[in-house]
Image (cartoon, rainbow, N blue to C red; front, side):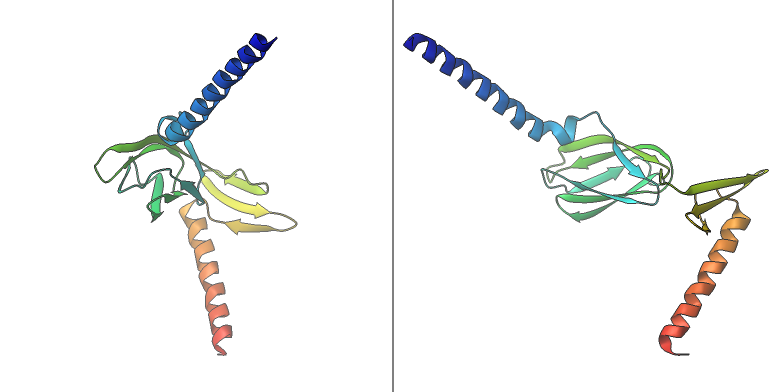
Length: 164
């Protein structure tokens, strides 16, 4: 009877040590060896916390994604255009901390409506009312019109705030 209890304790001890080792190794290697890419939506930011401080940041294609270093352990990724690139992070001794793919995709938000008129494209955000919205791939004429309307609206708001 006592032998079986000791045998159970040894088995439980081995399972606990194995589980602890798995958890620790996942925590240490998760940021550097995980095959899953960093997914970012275009025109949106994503915060990534690191387990080790970073000293050098290298982006494969800065036209696809940008990274701002908020602190030595916090990075903010911003999707600039759709596509794939990678990021390489180095520590103070130029040792690689991370080499990971970045995937930037279009917004999957509800209410996004894209209208094609021949080769001209325009984007709208629709709820109860549809409002023009600039998106990558919209025609230059549509983009200029939306920018002009936005500037005019901001100028009116600034004048009203100043009391003019």
